[in-house]
Image (cartoon, protein in one colour):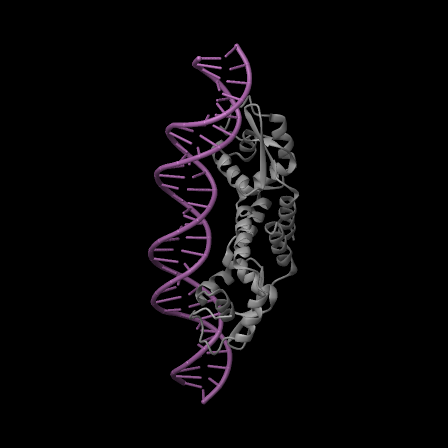
Length: 119
Length: 119
DNA sequence: TGAACACATGAACGATTGTTCATGTGTTCA
DNA sequence: TGAACACATGAACAATCGTTCATGTGTTCA
């Protein structure tokens, strides 16, 4: 494999064998970018709070806004992001649209985060 | 518990009993903010890539820069963030400083993220 | 001791992000 | 059918974030 032409430290002092060894074990760049993008979604307290609400039950946009003390517009924008990334799903019920978690993976990931924080 | 004075939808059309029910079940605001902050750290591809390197072995700053094709300064700044949040630790070895993962919790969280993305 | 090296850090700049404001879409019901 | 309601969305603005550049700190070794 070819070394990238980057000036960081002097080429002769870095550890080429270690670099090569780790490079062979690393996952694809694109996969790691996807993981980062996933975590980026969870990296906002508004979105986390929305997900925690949906963790408890299926609710309408209005109720989320009421629960979080935020405007309906702000909530809608965030719901769109969560929906585009397949973390939540929605269904219409009359004039209202009810949101819920897409699958249990979301619960697992947030659960891990909560566990790490609570020590 | 007192309702927050927020105009979102008309007060009489929202579901007060649902709001109250969910509110009682929700974790503390501060805890959720901490979780969001944790995920925010993982929400950057440079940091994820650094963590994946450290996932494989303990390495010096230079080698990380070489592996990621980035400047030493950029890596150092990110290492500081990871270190401040107790996700990695460091030890000096002569002129070099070797970094490694702080604990296995980090592996678990990234593992969950990878699993979710790879479907 | 001082030159060379590995790494850290502060300031600055461009890019991204979350909220607000105004307005648009789709549904209900009198 | 049209008014009222629930929700979505585009533009804009402030705030946050990641990288670069320049420079500072700490260690080694001749």
